[in-house]
Length: 292
Image 1 (cartoon, rainbow, N blue to C red):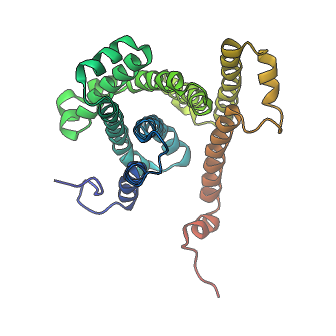
Image 2 (image 1 turned 90 degrees about the vertical axis):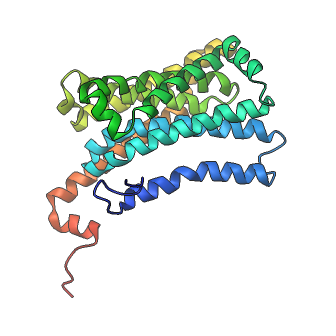
């Protein structure tokens, strides 16, 4: 038996240990706030929201592992993808449990709310999907299902991510910045993975393709924000589009998507530069010889 922070051979993995500890951070912070009254006048509601926020963040983080691993040339990064995905499931369970606790564990009432409220129905379906993925995340289940069947099953994670993003967007009500950002990032991830599914994965690793995906996702994010405010408030969509080119309207969701995409590309370029110039790579790794 190996622990989550160990390699398959039983050796300690510092990467897995750091990620494992970090996964407890948001939950511990929320529990501290609940215990010491720093979550505001509605602590249960705030705790429910925090658990939900971290569910979707970790879910998207697990989806980002494959492109980051390929872009950064860091194969060991794949070792934490399953851990992050299970972490997302754990926060989803906490999200539902806290909601039930807020309803005094009146389970029939909770069930009726899930059936009658569309966004709760979507969230519950996403949770069922996450449950299936978590239940089949062990090495034993991979062997039992077989590699190809396991991969086909786990591709539903993209459907789950879409359902989670819709649930996040609907329940956000006034503050929709992060849900819109998540929508833009999902466009980026789906574009990247679609190239792999269609047999053109090598094309996805081309820097100009990654830049095109980033710019396209940025544009879709801006358009999505404009459509939302047009439907919600009737504001002219062009005013929202123009706001994305202004420094006076604050950081728009499209800027966040653009920044994340460009940051990943710049990191991959830095990795390429380190490989081309061994002395620079050794310096960055802290292993350059001392010539003094």
